[in-house]
Amino acid sequence: SQQGEEDPQALSIQEGENATMNCSYKTSINNLQWYRQNSGRGLVHLILIRSNEREKHSGRLRVTLDTSKKSSSLLITASRAADTASYFCATAARGSQGNLIFGKGTKLSVKP
Amino acid sequence: DAGVIQSPRHEVTEMGQEVTLRCKPISGHDYLFWYRQTMMRGLELLIYFNNNVPIDDSGMPEDRFSAKMPNASFSTLKIQPSEPRDSAVYFCASSFSRGSAAFGPGTRLTVT
Image (cartoon, rainbow over all chains, first blue to last red; front, side, top):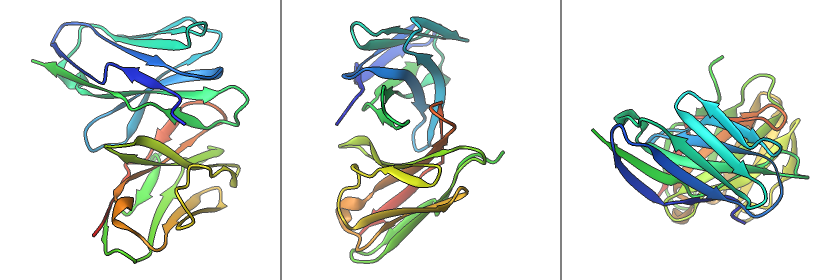
């Protein structure tokens, strides 16, 4: 069954603006991960946040995790046209042996 | 490291034919995942292995699908017989323990 659900399904912004994508999940997790997929390519890991962490930064990326609400957000600051891609959250459920379940993704379009 | 290697990159076959997809994970990774991606269903986890042992194959659509991992450096996903609804991009991914997953470039399968 679907574990992570991203919101919105599609997002269109201008270069320089911030983009925020949200992810909700259903069960307790060990960690939550965000991935990026350019059209026609494989997924690339962006950032992993553990269940005992609340916020994590990597360059222009900021991820938050609220385990009480079973939700996470990915913020991309000062977006660039090259950030245009689909972004997925994936969860590793607590008690699982490591399988990652992905949501359907948010399609981000950054216009120059 | 060359990353996760998948072959072939593209496969076009006729309904009823056998299809074999191949994957070489990153050396040292102990988890291997097979995913299928379509527009309608997004990224679906088909099966995953830990230390070459299948852990969860509940995502495998039906008996026409089978996967093997004879050693730590090689896995196959076989569809026999193939059907048009199997057309999708099939991704192999590997990870170490419960960390981030590295994805291969995918195999685009078209069944006519």
